[in-house]
Image (cartoon, rainbow, N blue to C red; front, top):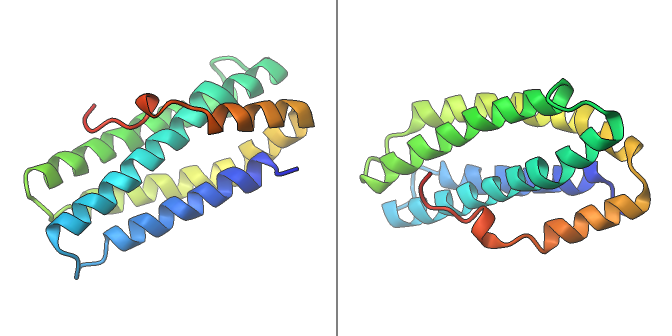
Amino acid sequence: MKTILSFMGEDHDRLDSIFKDFKNENLDKNKAKGLFHEFKTGLQRHIVWEEEILFPLFEDKTGMHDTGPTAVMRTEHKKIKDFLEKIHISLANDDIHTSDLENELIAVLTEHNNKEENILYPWIDNSVSEKEKEEAFAEMKNLSPEKYNKCCE
């Protein structure tokens, strides 16, 4: 059985790879926009998986509602979504000079992902049963794209 840590860590790696491709300065504008859209919607899906499936499961198991690591993660998600939207708006206006925003996003994401992979995901893995993990993975797989495939927020 796959762990939450391995599944979500693999998604972090997939998203990092897309973002790295997006940052390639040799891309034409349309290719860059397409890669950013793929990154943005993928990261939005990842956040929905956490906020609507994994965090409630963890909070129910630990009793840590509105406190602890998930409260911190939700606050950081707001910052991440703000950076995503700012970059998206710049690209939509044909301004491809988003390096400062990209660097700020990467700084927040790097710290955020490290906390998830080193603290939260292992804690979730240790707190839930195999059956609960299977149910969470099934929910994640069946998540409607309408929940995360948003162009503008």
